[in-house]
Image (cartoon, rainbow, N blue to C red; front, side):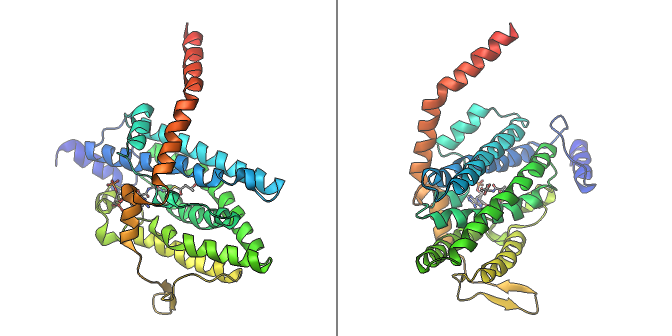
Length: 306
Ligand code: 3HC
């Protein structure tokens, strides 16, 4: 191990954060660019399924809350793109990687939002899963990434609360509303568990991620935290988790749960989910239609420089 690599690993082992100007192994840099960019892409693409219901929200309050949430996601994406750019990649390169399919984004955003209850399920389950993952990322070794998590986590808890409030209202509403809430839970439960990534034994990146303290907990550990917490929340509002193998294990003090369908996961991740093509087509269209904003901002910035 060269001297610099040893000094780098000693800093990681001493829980010191790595800053943009610090020396870092290329593999660490590339690992971060991969993960942070995919995180940012997920935030931006995630605006589509939710934005789909802004014009159809059931009340003015519901509409305002959803608009605030979608705006937050845009802000999360911009924080994360900025953190990623500090590693020496440009915004244009990042957007190109997303639009050409070179970069991934979270599996979860390739499912359709069929009813208002889906907006509740997304806030409750997807943002609930994101909170577990992002709270852990507050301890990540790369400084800009860890700092971006502080504000993102604060806003995510609002997202999760608003989703759970929707599900609670509907599961205590009319028969039809209860059915809509249960149907949404049935469709979003397993893809939410998949958000945490493959099982640790099958995770290509986790060993380096843990060695470099990019991840502080493993995929399975975070999945279990989310599951244990969410099962109780479902019980509280009278919804049934769609897993016949779900069972409290008094010995481990965790819930045992059924097998995740990794064929579905990889089908979606590799671009063959319900909405993958539509999500990217919308993203490309929005960039094309909005290019004048970028050109105007760049022209203004140039004028201000002179
Ligand atoms: N969706 C899509 N791809 C996934 C995935 C998922 N849920 N989980 C894993 N993958 C991909 C990985 O990107 C990797 O592919 P790659 O080599 O082409 O990048 C491959 O599957 C192997 O998985 P690993 O577990 O080895 O990969 P990681 O170590 O990167 O772990 C992760 C995956 C846990 C998602 C990790 O990248 C991570 O913690 N990322 C940051 C959090 C994040 O991106 N969350 C996405 C949701 S954001 C969100 O929900 C916003 C909220 O406001 C709505």
